[in-house]
Amino acid sequence: MRVVDTSLWIELIAEGSLLAVAQKAILPLNSCLVPTMVHFELTKWCNRVLAEEDAKAVRSLLTDCITADMNLAIAVEAAVLSAKYKLHATDAVIYATAQLHEATLFTCDAHFKNLPGVDYFEK
Image (cartoon, rainbow, N blue to C red; front, side):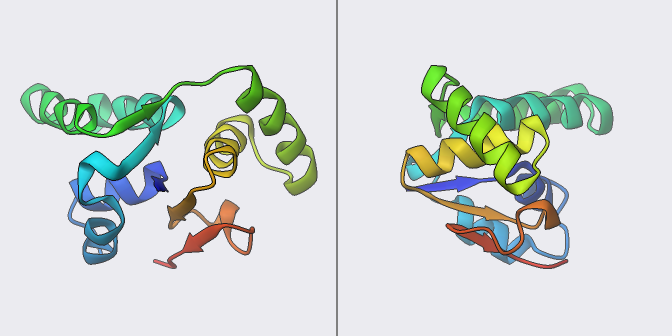
């Protein structure tokens, strides 16, 4: 199981410098776990940056993935991880989701660099 942070989703959508890495991390969609916080961040980014039709296409892509809803266990683990690694709430929830699902977190967000269970790709 894989969790892909918002930063790599943006690399995929924007065809950034880490496009090939993002494709490997995200595809196939049906085995990619997407925390609800990634849905939030990515939808916010799409609404700000993309045309309406393109934003809808991205939201459609996400429906082919497995959504990991936030629950009490994730909230509690996120609080612990936030304090331990000095993560902001959103990052802590994404990381906790990966940890509790025993999934690797793929990201190019430096906040996650050197954390256990993270595959970090520098831009």
